Image 1: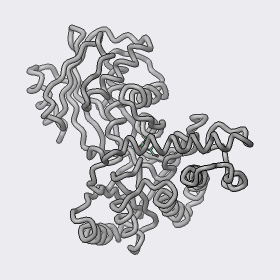
Image 2: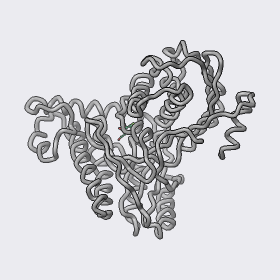
Image 3: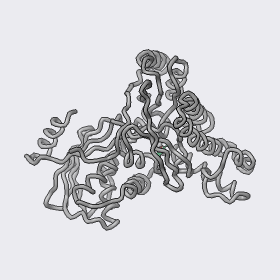
Image 4: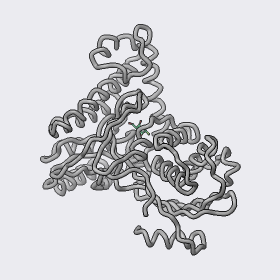
Length: 389
Ligand code: GAF
């Protein structure tokens, strides 16, 4: 939907002639470093050009009204700034409401209501972080509409708090970070323990990053996600008998191998192995990228998928089918699932001249194996959440 249509939609929905201010927050892909963030390890995500748009105007009272073009069935919802602790509804409005709630709790002065229309072009539930995108676009709306000076990393942390405490999914900080801090044509290496980060230029003149959506519903994804996190925490407890560590991200693969026998449960041992080796691969991946060793970078990307498939067990038939089909194609530098897994999307780095053929081959193979088609998007790497002037 283009800007003018969005504005018309806004005016019609809220029955107003007021010209809205417009905001955008991207979605994200993660190049490598999966299920490492809540283990205090490294991640290497980038913001993408798909995301959430929002049109906004102020109100004189203390009501906030939300409407999403993506969820017309939920109609317009109205809340008061004074009763945000109640969130009995089970739908998307909890994400923006949570942002208002925690910013108010932190003492930011939000002294009147807003009318907000959202429109997202990130496929929902596809693991490209549509939820963090709504959180961060709301955060930036609040910052700009009330002329607040909020440190961007604070907004990122509040987005994570919404996810953890308001919604109840125990996610790490990667998604909110990527969406809040994104930079055009750059990926970001974040140390999720110290929150130190660095930008790395991604100039793939001769390559595309294609995103391939399994179009599989991510059923039970939240409970399985929380279970993985719990298994890693149990592994840390066992290791603490002899090691003075707080998180798996503190271990090198060598140190892990010397002590892994302390982890009682075999499944927990596998989970911990993934977290430790994936962290090492992620640090290495940045070095390889900086050195221009794209083939080796791609090899690390592939190893990441294998580890998520065999040790972390979060891929499933659909993501494996796509990824393995991609590996078999000429011109594919690397391919893996991205995000939490259990369905959602994979990414593939492909030589431009092969992109069309690779897409065709993956589509045919997936259709034959799974019974329906995947979707494809070519991602541009974009800036983080901001107002569009
Ligand atoms: C989801 C979570 F939100 C992130 O914090 C991260 O753990 C990711 O899954 C897996 O790497 O996107």
